[in-house]
Every structure is written in structure tokens, then in C-alpha cells.
Image (cartoon, rainbow, N blue to C red):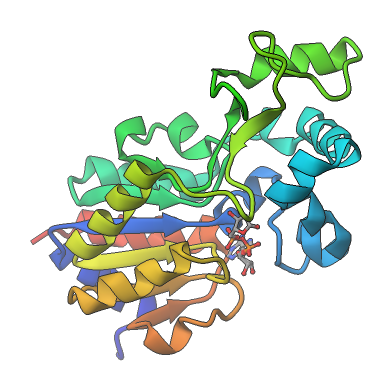
Length: 257
Ligand code: APR
């Protein structure tokens, strides 16, 4: 019987010394956090919402900040729990094969699932901290949520009065150089780059697919919809991630030669 795609990828993972995972919003939808560009995505349903993710608009327009803070207050991440997809990557880490998870997600669910925080590279930052855009002071998001719940609409820095923003990277904002360098290293050092739940439409993160391929890795894309990198991939697996990823990792782990 012909080897299934999942079995073939499981063999690659089993034979790999090092696997790097690149995750996107698609791994968190089964935890109740909508993605951006999928059929039920935040931007699919409300294209204008993309403006709330533009750094210059956030800095320039108090009304954008008020709208963003309202969304932060109601974010699904506060009640979301990790799902089987997150847990499968924890299993992969515990099998000794996973180098790092480069995640575009800001929800912290990889760490909540048990992934080693030192191996989770949050290239688009995190929802769990707040940064002052003037003095750089970082504080827990919970502190600012409490101020919002007490009625503040556009809280400012308690130290310098500057504009506060969640520790996420908006369009127009630079990535953290150290996190980006570590992400490139992780893509270049792996035998398999396992892309999970990303439409691979945002750069520079999507270019990690080329970094991995140029370094001789196999590129595997697990996603419900097609991506611009499918033609570059050695294997493309259709979702749902919560079923396919555990099957893939389970098959790779049970038969390590
Ligand atoms: N199983 C498989 N695939 C899924 C599932 C699922 N359960 N749920 C969603 N997907 C797929 C969608 O089909 C979509 O192609 O996950 C992909 C998510 O793509 P995006 O919504 O574009 O999310 P992402 O690639 O992470 O976006 C990158 O862009 O929005 C900005 O900064 C934000 O980090 C984000 C970046």
C-alpha cells in the first residue's frame, strides 16, 4: 500500500535529528481564537479591522487606540486553553527532536501547553505584556486590563505618560532583532521545517521557508488552505491541525529506529 502523506512526513520527522516548527493563527482556532485570513478570520469578516493592526495609525489616532484596547479586553486568548495541536508539539519536544517553535501567535498557548518557553520564539510579540512606546517600560497586560475594566479607555504609562501598547508587533513595527536572528538560526539548523496553521502571507516570517530549503531542510506545510509556499514544499498536508498533527507526531515518536 502506498505510503500516505502523513506516514511519509512522520518518517521524515522520525529520521530527523532536528525539527523546527513555524506556527500561525491556525493552530489556535481550535482553542477558540479566530485566525485572520481563514474562512472565519477576523479580517475575512471585517477587512477594516486590519487598520487596528497598523502601528502608525495606532500612534497617531486615539480612536484607534480606544478600539484596540476594547478588543484586548475582550480577546479570546484570556479564556482559551491549548488544544491537541499545541500538545503534539510538546510531545515532539519531549521526544528530543524539536529545536524551537517560531510562532507568529501572541496568545501564549504554546507555553501554556507545556512547551519550553526558551524554545518558543514569539516573532510577533506577546499579548501578555504591555510596553510604553516612550520609555520602553514593560508591564503585565493584566495590570492594564484592570485599568480598562475600571473605565480607562486609552491608558498611558504610569511612569512617563507615554502611549501604551500591547507587546505585539504591528505592521510597520520592527521585529525584535534577537528573536528574529534566533528564528533564522532555527530555520537554517533544522532537518524539517514544519509549518502549522499559517497562510504564509506575512514577511519576513514566511521567508523562513526559503531559509530552511536553502539550508537543505525538508519543508512540510500543514494548513487547511493553500499557501504561496505550497509549490516549494516537500509535502503539503490539509488540516484540521488538531487531528493531523497529533497523528503525525504520534506516528513519528512511536517508531523511532
Ligand atoms: N486546521 C488547519 N488549518 C487551519 C485551522 C485548522 N484548525 N484553522 C485555521 N487554519 C488555517 C487557515 O486556513 C489559514 O490559512 O490557518 C491559516 C491561518 O492564516 P492567517 O489567518 O493568515 O494567520 P497567520 O498566518 O498566523 O498570520 C500571520 O499576520 O495577521 C497578522 O500578525 C498577524 O501573526 C499574524 C500574521
